[in-house]
Length: 85
Image (cartoon, rainbow, N blue to C red):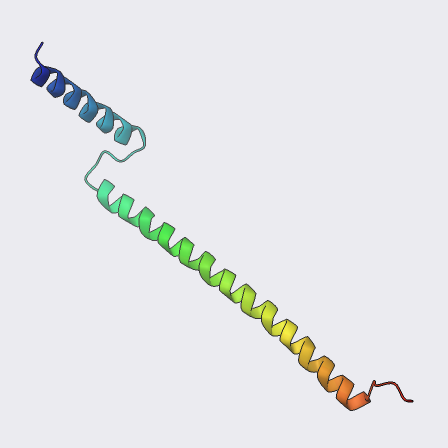
């Protein structure tokens, strides 16, 4: 068997295996390209939602902390919590 024949046999086996794998997961038809694109778009959207949710959480926590600092400063100015001599 020549090297070219071996390469051709390996190529055919690889293609057959890939087709079987796609058939096993239900991606054997012409709509498979659209299905894969749709799944990729869904994953991109999910990543965007996670990123936005993380940023929103940090902004809310930061706003709460700054609100407490401002409220504490205002309260200490208003009630004059400094010790009297």
